[in-house]
Length: 166
Image (tube, one colour):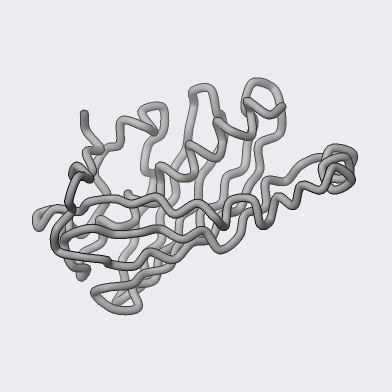
């Protein structure tokens, strides 16, 4: 089950940079801070983890991946195709003011849906919520992940620009 949870986390995390392609943000280096994650574990597995001293809600909070957004990407008004979600297709994408919502259907290792919401608070900060619902390798794979992305610098340093197509 750990492999299924890890694969689902990777799938949901790959949606976070996609939400950056919504227009109105600064190009450069961004840091993503996980605010909370509910991986929808069966009660007996959640209890076993709790007894082992593992708090899934805090486990991912320490993760702070960084992404580099180019000028062109910062101006986009909808997400591009994403190599990480090659078995997923964007069914709907709506941008209204500073709010964006998207819905994806996946038919690969993960069979189900991904719902994404983002709110651009300023050109240097946006929040996201990604919800997955479906099955991965025969196991229920439902999860909710919330994050805040903050602009760090116009210089990405050693971080290569995010490339959803390669």
